[in-house]
Every structure is written in structure tokens, then in C-alpha cells.
Image (cartoon, rainbow, N blue to C red):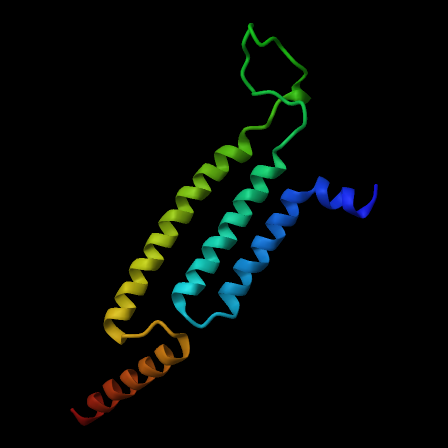
Length: 137
């Protein structure tokens, strides 16, 4: 098997690796929290695609016992477990992203920034002001 055949034969996995790298890059390198959250979502999608693509079998059929379809050897059925688990993962991912965006809206309303270094500096100043006010009382 040549390198090109290997690459073309496993294109879904290379796509997953590219998405994983892109999502990880967004979470680690970017300083804006919205971009970090987008990176996390891309990373989640890559994991979901990986699990679904790992369930693919050539020549397999749906796992339903039907006299019209006939019975096949158990190895020729597609395992539905990955698909059902990933439906749950999609729901959890959407809920996580929704909560994350709601938190970002709250942070922006309070501190007027979503840039990580600037936000940390404003939080530090606010904490110091609160401590100073507490000491003065």
C-alpha cells in the first residue's frame, strides 16, 4: 500500500486530526474567550466525527431483524452504539456551548472585554479595590 493510498483510504481520520489540531490551537493560542469557545466546539465536533467514522464497516447493514431483509452474520451489522452515544454528545456539546456563551455575555457586561490578559488585569484591579475598601471600613 503506497502512501497516497493510505492517505486516501483514511481520509476521515486525517480530517479528524486536522479538526483536533485546529480546535486545540484555538483553545490554547487565542486570547479572546469567544475564539477559545469556538475552538472547544471544533474540538468536540472532531471527537464526534472520530467516533462516528470508527463505526463504519464496508458491506454492513442496519442492525434490525427483519424477515424481508434477511438474517446476516452478526459481524455484518453496523454497531449503533457509537451513533447513539454521539447523539448524546451533540446535545451535551450544544448545552456546554450555550452555557459558555451565556457566561461570556455576563463577563462582557461586567468587565467590558473578552480579551484574556485584559480581563485578568481588570479582575485583579477590582479585587484590589475591594480589598482596599474592606481595609478602610
